[in-house]
Length: 414
Image 1 (cartoon, rainbow, N blue to C red):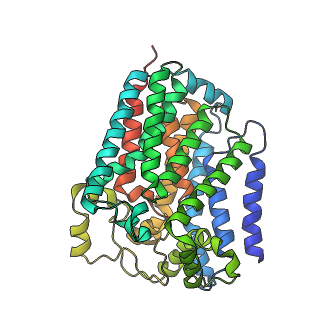
Image 2: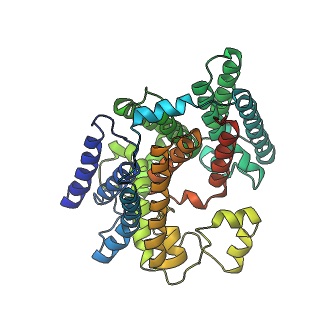
Image 3: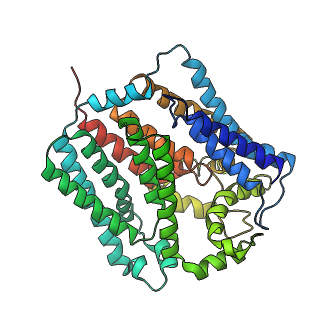
């Protein structure tokens, strides 16, 4: 292990150690984002694959620019709120749980969300003709189980599960309705597992965990460790169903790993973490033309139906300069692809300001909407090493669905 990896792993350790202090917010933006990127840089510099390469000084600068700009934006909000009274975590939980909701409306909206999910699931199944888990080629079928427009409804899996959790948190009685909600959530999870797609499950788990952290006393640093361990086990189980031992070994070979094939199981998680930043560093100095908003505001083009027209007209290659089978570039690639160094510097800084503003609003005046919205932000920060979630129509769809419905069910206090 080299000194650069040791340095970043030490940062991750110190962040984890700081979480042990009493009344510390373990999901504060600087902690979530800091531990994510310190681990990414530490793991990437281990160079356990021959597909990885040593970075030059300029490449290190380009790799660090986005995360540092984001942290600078967060620091500005910290300075702006230095004199403000911020509620401790236990008081946030108390205030949020004291808020009243229209549980009857939430019940019917959860059922409605479930029906929309089923419509999307059945419609895509009718069009594609097979479910990935029961197909002859699960790995290929899972990527094809979608259809423009109606396929968006399948992403309601996150909405149904999150609303189910909120219903149980804020409803004291109505056991019959709670049973119906449990059945709905169970059916949603089982049917979605048959698609062998992990991302929505990861997102739902992260958002649900963050929401429970800010609304329940049952979530602590220890329970967070259990949650992460369980999440890794579930992800591995789905990956095993999806790929199998033979494909794991094939992935080990194609990834040109430097360690023994006995540890082939670690190939997929390691490569999915490090190859995003490797692709970014490899491509950032080769890019000669920018797309001026196409990737940053991709969801707008998708919503208006112009996305594919613009892509074909301008011959936009969404994954340029690839040198392996991994095709993602981190959150910050979209900003550089669109606006160059300016985008890589100021858009992450603006995002840091926005995230910090949401967080401190939550700490000053917590509501169920703020908790939900910040829980989504926690997931975005945690996955910022992977892709730009903010550019996907399905992600904006989920955010809009959750925030609008939560706003509609919260009863205003006089």
